[in-house]
Each structure stands twice: as C-alpha cells, then as structure tokens.
Length: 203
View 1: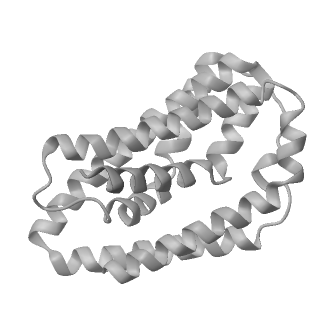
View 2: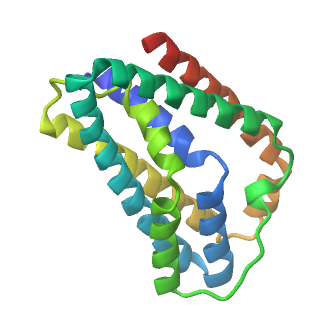
C-alpha cells in the first residue's frame, strides 16, 4: 500500500475512533469508576473487538469486489448513506452526549468484558468499516496488505482509547472536553459527510 494511501487510512480510522458514541462512553465510565488501569483495559479490549470486525470486513469485501462488482457498488452506496446519517447526527448534536458520564463500581475483568462486548454488539461498526475499507481494498490486494489495513484500524482504536483513559485520569480534562463537545461533534460530522461524498464518487 502506498504511503499516502496508508496515511489516508490512518486519518479516517482516527476520526472514526475519536467520534463520540457508546465506545467513548464505556471507556469514560470505567476510567472514572475504576481508575487508569480499568480504562486502559477497556480500551485495549475494545480494540480487539474492532479488529475482529475489521478482519471480517476486509476479507468479505475482497470476495465481494472480485465476484459481485454490482453488489459491491450497492454496499458502498449503503455505507455512504450510513456515514452521511452519522455525520448529520453529529452536526445536530449539542453539548454533553457521550461525555456526560457518571461513575459506577467496576473491575478490570468487567472493563475487559464491556470493551469487547460494546465493540461486538455494535453492528454499525460493520457498516462503518464497509464504507471505510471499500476505499482501500482491491481484488488483487495481498494477504499482507489486508492485514495492514486491519491492524491499522485496530491499533489506532486501541491507542486512542488508551490515551483517553490516561488523559481522563486527570480530573481537569473531562470538564474541558465537556465544554467543547459541540465542536468535537461538528468536526466529526464534517469529516463523516466528506467521507460519504468520497464513497459516492468512488462508486
């Protein structure tokens, strides 16, 4: 994979990981309730769940591209609609949202369980990866190339949520994010809408 294409993948995966939602809420909850270690465990576990979905999508897309190009274009367009809807919701979001979290009792085992389940129980991740990876998967892509795509998505997700847990261990950070959550949502919305447009043009 050319470096500039891989950097585009990195940027898109980062924006997907950073967007406020149930995954962020879960990591915040475990960090506030169980401290830094619980938050880190939740983030790493979530990344493994993301890796499972990314791998399934990468190999499934490859087969779809090779054998059913018409169906692949239809899936791309459905993914673009979903991304546009996510972008619209993000632009319409107000303050707080996923950043309004209250602590509860937790443990490292509970954090590991919740991190994995929040990822695997979210079928929207499949739609997100279909729309995202359709820009990077080709019929002749090697196994190493597919694994590079999958590992990029998984590592970026894990690094982001581990950083969230480490940073939010300091009590002054969460109020700062809450005060600026509307701008975080708007930036995420613009990026998702731009990605949806790119998917449509590619289809």
